[in-house]
Length: 431
Image (cartoon, rainbow, N blue to C red; front, side, top):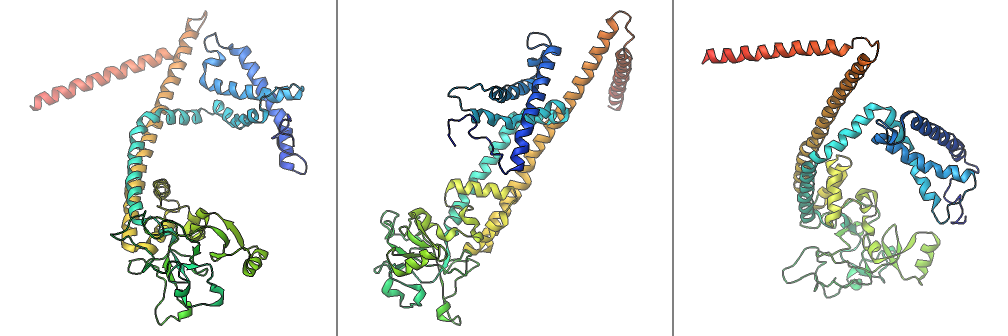
């Protein structure tokens, strides 16, 4: 379709009952809104008179919605709008349900109470952000990088020549870093991120076990999920816990043509790669995608719930405080670092963040909602009394009920004053 056409961006009605109904009813609602708009202007005035149409904030919202509807009216008569993006203007049609606010006073009270709550919520939101920051930083210190820890089929990264499909067990002949004594899964005193052997990504890979997609704990850690590589487990079933990042956060490997089910990297010209490509199992991955490939599974929430960066930690803490999907994050951390650490962290997060802070947020909203209802009730009574007084001042007007109401209020005021004086006198006698 031509992007410059007037109907660009509109729903295609061909073979679509839903789009056909939507496009058929659109002119009907537009005409109803226009009729309502002109009727209110005739009855109330536009802006200058007291109580005019545009002197009500809710009517201003209706006015904006009606103005955007004029675009459709102009289109019916074939009027073009030059370089104006008509489809962008039509987007404002999503505001049409907001017209129901003028007919639902209860909904108006809720909206007003939310707006009135903003000043009071400032301190609460500041406290929430403070809690997010504290637990986010703690989470980075304890759980950064754990989502990338997976059970691997070799004890260390290997070169692309290694063929795990052939069942090779002489891993040392294919070691990616022959001179390195370990995989740098933990920091060392004499190394920094800049002089780590993995500071420059290598043309290697570390095949992971496709049958075990859970996060694992390194040897010597308290992680709940371990990768077995000791007897009595048969040697051909041994696996080792490893990550595509070293302890300093360096990415170990370059991207490449990858079997997305196992993490295997192929030479694109090899026969094995051609067979894998024929079975639609390979993708050409960037360095970032490849190094995060181990996290792309359901057990790790597809790599979305991590503590690798402050931003991701902030999101993970927010998700946990809402108590929606926080247990899988806790289980993942328990598998990597241990039950005690992860359980204490998330227990404190739920108690402080969810039970206390979010409850405080709800309390502020509830208080402002109650105040808004009382204010609306008082304004309604005041309007009724004013209407009754105006009716009484009119020729032949009846005595307004407000007179009786004012007399009752006066009696109540006198009774309350007498009770206060009696209470004060009793206190003085008691002294």
